Length: 170
Image (cartoon, rainbow, N blue to C red; front, side):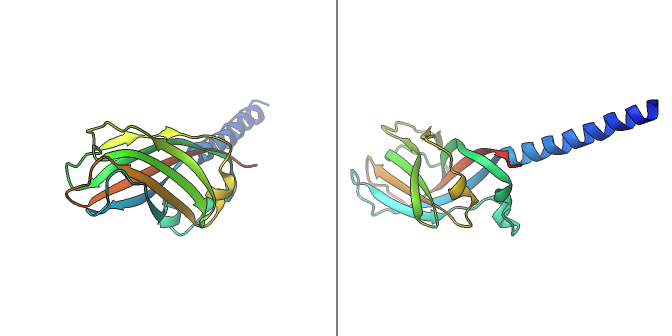
């Protein structure tokens, strides 16, 4: 009787831990996109840049996003990739939109009145609803709309990192 009870406890613990591991693995997942701000971009004018976002699952040739639901943006961050030691002081505003292969675009993050001399900055989230359809698609497109305070003296490459949260689908 003790063996059956002990086996049941161990079996239950194993099942719960598998679900917990799946939940932890799928709970947050990042997408990244790069934005190039060229030297010739004028100040005080909105400029748009579109890129295909990638995540770890696409790097390894799979899309396990069908196993998740209730997808929301957990955080959004912008950082300077190059030039080395560059900062975000040239930016005035930034807005980040995501879509599924360019359709169904939604504003997910933004920041106005940027006054940061830092090389990275967390953006303000726009969490109006779930993003399941966009994230479960095969092609997530990120469109970045930015405005500069002043023209840059050299090209600047920015990385947009979007971390989504979800729960496992049953």
